[in-house]
Length: 182
Image (cartoon, rainbow, N blue to C red; front, side):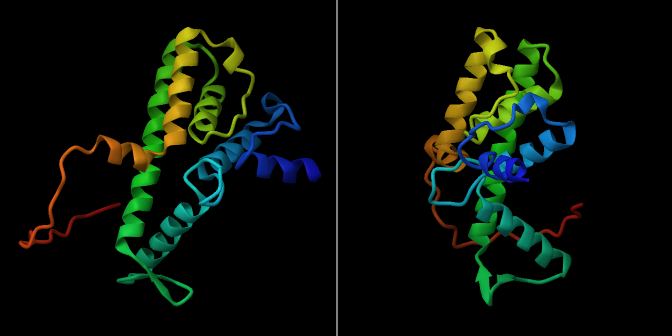
């Protein structure tokens, strides 16, 4: 029981190993992937997309399902900007993990679960491994290094850094188009 509780906390923050990660079942490894992806709470040093980001997305999805105009929690409205930023953080993080996973799969012949575990851990800056990192070739290690760097800088900070065009606010609004989603 204590080992399970410790494992759930370590996947979201520090990456201390009490159980060899390669000995986890597939189900436990996939749950660990989710916990690493979500990460810790904001303002701390934990990686991942952050607990508040995923909470905003879940609350926003719930409001959409209930056909609400506004996303509310605790008698407060969550701004559209916060929702949009949450979507952007998740999309950018997922994109970084996906590209890293594809690149790592191209340079190694490890199992898909081991590769995904490495890239999610690197993106979320957790530091856990299923014993794949030490066996990677130079290209694999370079991919993991770049992934850790991108994960530490943060997806939104990275997007803002590469934004070159300063956009001004339009006083003319484009028409709204209702599209079919989902």
